[in-house]
Image (cartoon, rainbow, N blue to C red; front, side, top):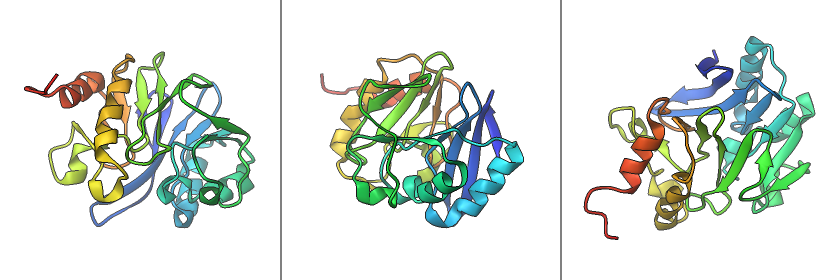
Length: 211
């Protein structure tokens, strides 16, 4: 079942097992917005979650081109006919034949969100920042620390085996520190709902970091 992690913000987990968890996020207002769409094979679970919330997304924002973020896009578009926002760097081949309504880039506004380009995990990876709500949806810029078997409550870079360039990914995190936020919503591992900016700052600017 969906979990309301912040007021009006729901974690819809579409698959869990073998130490892995796949999820999307649903923001109820002001425009019902789905951030990413899960795997192609998890759309039934996604639709069940949205039915439980009694919310139909009017907007879908894709953060980057991995299959667990874009695989369900064709089915979501077919069922709900939402306005679709996709990063300008995302290749058409990742979209399953969907023609996006808007190609967005760094600094663009999507409703209350500002898109922040944070490449490294993938060249097209974007985070979505809503300072009014105090939240960052990180795409795969970071993961919850428990993805790596550590205690939950902290943020780490995604595993190298799933990433394009971890050096670039780490450098990109500094861009998020230009914003004010408290919660960091991740797609793998556990989100950090309190003190997220301070914890990200501590990770980026670790003790003894060369200047």
